[in-house]
Length: 98
Image (tube, rainbow, N blue to C red; front, side):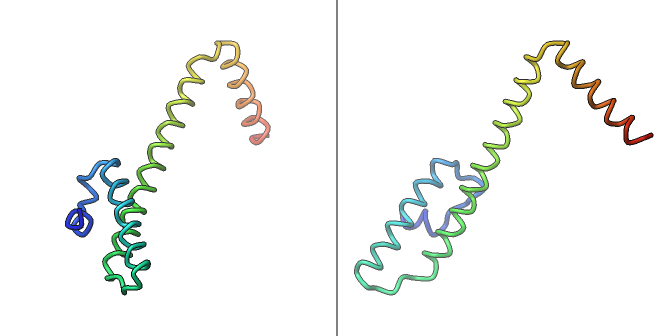
């Protein structure tokens, strides 16, 4: 696991692997601190890089889910609701143009 942690390829690793490596990295850092041993620089560097990648992927998943939900909401609106929205937007554009 240490080798995987040290040499993680963030591009090819899936989210589950990254989360497992993040857990390993936190445990590794904690063990060095518990034993009052100076931890190697790579521990913090890898922990930060892995956490950035996880956060980036989770944010991308959330953004994709929001886009999907918005499209689902839009597709379930009635023609009358859509027409009202279009009319409101048209009225706003005409007010700015005047």
